[in-house]
Length: 354
Ligand code: SAM
Ligand code: SF4
Picture 1 (spheres, protein in one colour):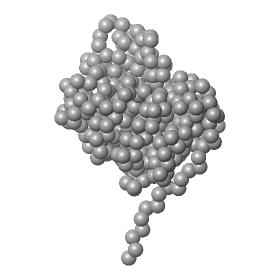
Picture 2 (cartoon, helix red, strand yellow):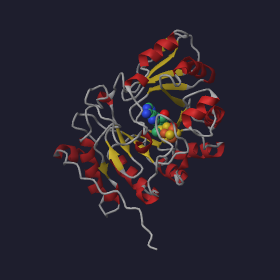
Picture 3 (spheres, protein in one colour):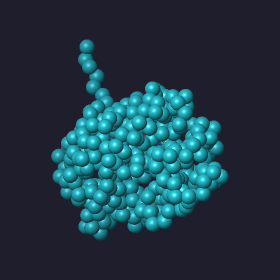
């Protein structure tokens, strides 16, 4: 019986060419004057969790041949570096499930980048791997943890991983020499909004950088609605009933989070990532690349551009660089979540790379 091979998703149209000055500059500039220097690279669409705000249990993954290979990632990052990229975040899906992760870090760690970070659910780490990546050039680790209660952990992540597993992985990251780890906590009304102060206490007790994230309309279950969002203001008020916070100035202007320390000098830091209530699009310098080689100028883009077909069709690095310049030029001014005509993108967070 004939075997049916999975069909590669069809190539997308190319973007319109960017103006000559953008191509001549050889830099990633968008039509709103923003200079793109940060790339979020998704290295897999696979995940061992099914977080309720991200994936559904029945979600299917792409066939392996659709995903970029290690050599394709390496080539692409080299081209991006030439185009002025300074920082790289490795993400997914769950990046620690990517079989060539060690080789990828060994490679990108040698490049002239200002920062290389990884976001992980912390379920698949050990000290040896963490140390190896650190010496290869990985600079920072961000962990995702949305609850400190074991029962809730099961129902939020729909995995067998425990809160203690993730806290253990965070301690290992410290032991391996990473600076103060960041912890992302997506807060959803009626799910975990009663743990905001507990997370603030964790930040103090464990000297962590806890970043509260507003729930975004990127869930595969499409359950998002405005009522589920606990906005940054409400979260701050909640914390300030217990602790006095001191706003941090002088942060990276492109940072996604607004940050605070504790006024009493306790260790730890609080961050708010508030794309819904306080969009930070004006200072956004990011570009996202999906695991199958699509370039997304914005998390909420409805347009995405295919770079994989160029990588696989004998195009020169110069031609690919020009295509990426064109793609970057199309970056939209803002995500428009608050607008009445906002439409949730087809892709979910796990298929984009958060
Ligand atoms: N699997 C890794 C992890 O969970 O850390 C990396 C990929 S995950 C897509 C990256 C980040 O996106 C996580 O911190 C996760 O909490 C966040 N995220 C996923 N879906 C989200 C949503 N609908 N709203 C806000 N943040 C979301
Ligand atoms: Fe997996 Fe991360 Fe999405 Fe959770 S947030 S389902 S760990 S990709």
